[in-house]
Image (cartoon, rainbow, N blue to C red; front, side, top):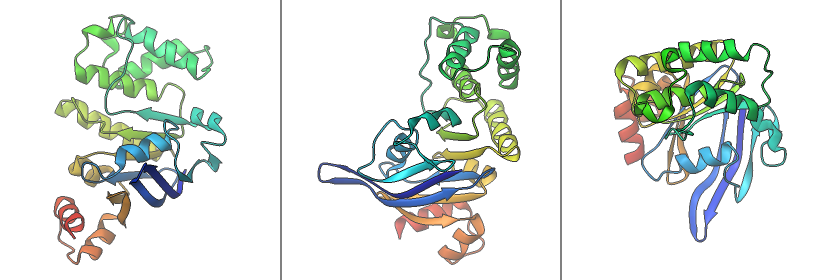
Length: 239
C-alpha cells in the first residue's frame, strides 16, 4: 500500500505541495487528477524517490521511501514519456531492467516473452527500439515496469500515444493487476480512464487535495448525484 503523510514541497517561496495526505490500499486503483501545475508531477517524483520533500513522508508497504530507498524494488513506475535505450532491442532492454532489479535469471526468458505478448509487441522482441512507434515504446515501458513483479505500480499519463486498442489493453491490464492485489496509483488527464478503472479518486489543486473519495462520494460533495466525472472535476476545481 501507499501512505502519503503531510507531504510539503517548496521551491524557494513557491509552495508546490501543501501538506498532502492520502492512502492507497492494497489492490486498489487510485485515480489522481488535477489541472496543469496543480502538483501531480511533483507528487509522483517524490513518491518514486526522484525528489525529496521539504517535509512529510511517503511510505510504501510501511517503509519510508526516503529513509530506506531499497523499498523502491517494490515499485513499478510508468512515466509519461518512454525513456529508453534505443540502440537495444526490446528483449535486451527488458533483460537490462531485470538486471537492475536483480530478477532471477531462471525463467527470465519466459517472463520477457509473456510481458511482450501481454502488450502485443512480442513479434518485435529482436528489433531495435529506435524503430518503434511512440505507442510501442510506451507499451515496452509498461512491460519493463512489471518485469520484477512489483506490488505497487505508479503510473503517470499511461495513455499518451496509445491507439484505442492499446489503451483498452492497458486499462484491462491495470484492472487485472489490482484484482491480484497490486496497489495502483494512476495520474492522468484522461477523466474517462479514471472514471472507468478507479475505485477511489483524489483531486489536487494548487498543491492541496481538494476532494477525495469514490465517484459517488465526489458527486455528493458537488451536490449532484448525476454528475459525470468531467463535470465534477470542473465544478470542484472551479469552486
